[in-house]
Amino acid sequence: MDNVVYIAAAIVALPGAVLSGLLVFNLVRPSGFWPADPGWRRDLTLWLFRAYAFGMVGVAGVALWVWGLGQWPRYAIGLPMMGGAYALSLWAYKGLGKDNTYFGSDGLVTVGLYAYSRNPGYVASLAAALGLAVVAGSVIVLALAGGLLAIYFLFALNEERWLAKGYGTAFLRYMVDTPRFVDARTVARAREDLLTRL
Image (cartoon, rainbow, N blue to C red; front, side, top):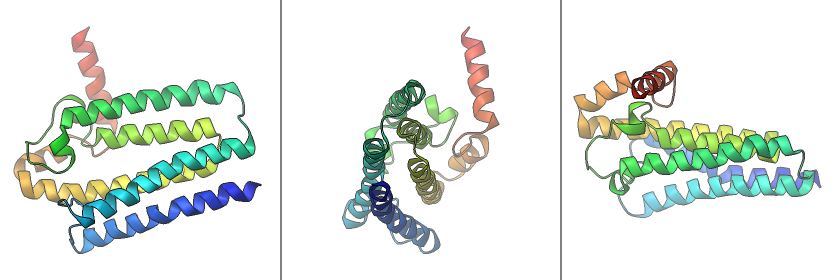
């Protein structure tokens, strides 16, 4: 029965591997896969990403079905992580705006959550994936979350080139001042902002 989880994970890993390959190829030889104009390249990229992300949730469900529900601390830790991360992700994408989320040119967003991270939506999604791994109690789901990190890293690298071309020195300054994901500057800024509000 354990084989079912491994087979499900292998099936889910396939679109992630193809997507990662396309993103690496796009870094080496820009070919319009990401960022992508509307059309088959964007559709393919988003389809592969969604297959991987939703598949990861499916693997977690299969793991719970095969290996059992486990103990309550997994849920006490993992479910709030997932819920909080999902809310944070929605907040990040709302701050960016729908058009900018899909490569519009509505202006460089550097405020709100984007003052702490250049990719807060990705950070939130990764936190949700970690919460999912905790709930599932599965190293396999944790490994798939690691794959998601690799995909987001490749997305970010491709997006940075596009943003630098579109926003020039403003984006380059933002890159220097704000971490790609999170680091000590994120924590320091959050603490500073919290103290000024108290």
